[in-house]
Image (cartoon, rainbow, N blue to C red; front, side, top):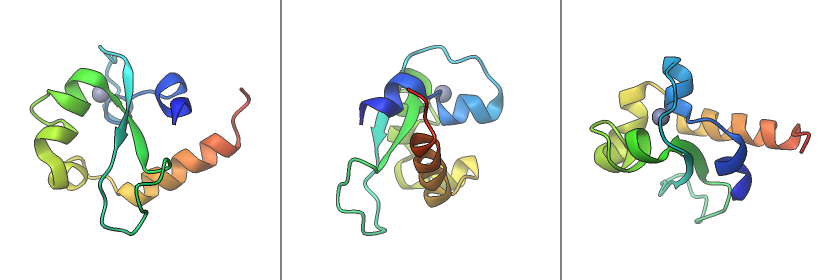
Length: 89
Ligand SMILES: [Zn+2]
C-alpha cells in the first residue's frame, strides 16, 4: 500500500519524538491474527533504524517488536485505517 510509505512518518520515530533519518517503508507484518497477507497489514517504519537494520528494528526483534515498543499492533493498524479513510489526498 503506497499511501503508508509516502504520507506517513515512522511509527517509532513519531512516538519517540525523534527526527526520522531515513525514508518511510511499508513494513509488512506476518501476524497471527488471521489477516491473510492483506495489503492492510502494513505499518510505516523508517527504512533503516526501525524497519530493517537497527538494533531494535522490526526485522531484528520480529515477534518481540510490538511488546518491546509497548504498542499494540491491532490498535496501530486501526489507527492507520482511520487516517486513511480521513485522508485529504
Ligand atoms: Zn523510525
